[in-house]
Length: 182
Image (cartoon, rainbow, N blue to C red; front, side):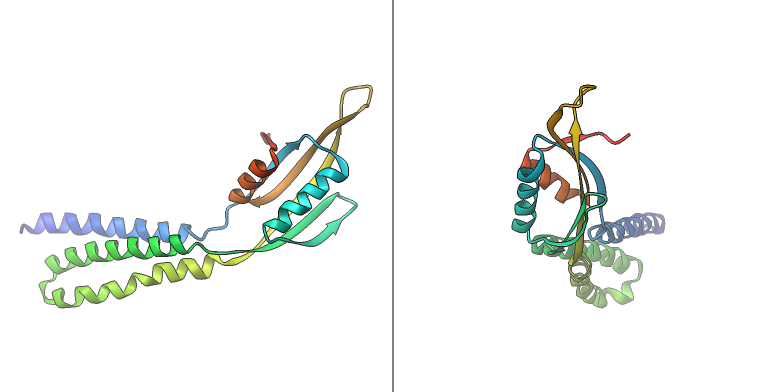
């Protein structure tokens, strides 16, 4: 094969390998966000629903700050077995492609290429170690008043700091509306 074709293929394969490494690293990245949610309840019923929701999701009450109406729940995030296996398979395909290109560039190492496959499970192991971590959900509740006559509203504003997947699950489970942050 032509040297220029091999060199360009090797360069593209190396760039894809770098992208794969960053993809694997990003799989365990912390994605904490702050969201303002509007609830159609107030007072004790809302607080009881929130407590029940977080208890069902295996969170426990860590801190209560009555002065700021803030509650912090803690729980353990479990890594996904499917994602660990998927990342390992993705790494195996990437390592095989890199090994194929390297075997064309350096024919002397052709027999060592299958040994590169031993690196593939490291991707799943990396994800498994990094993704299993303690997670916190900070929840602040504000009870809203309506217009100028200061009649109590039946709505509450929740400011939640949590992982974006947890925010989505909370919104869907309790039927909360998302307010856009300015």
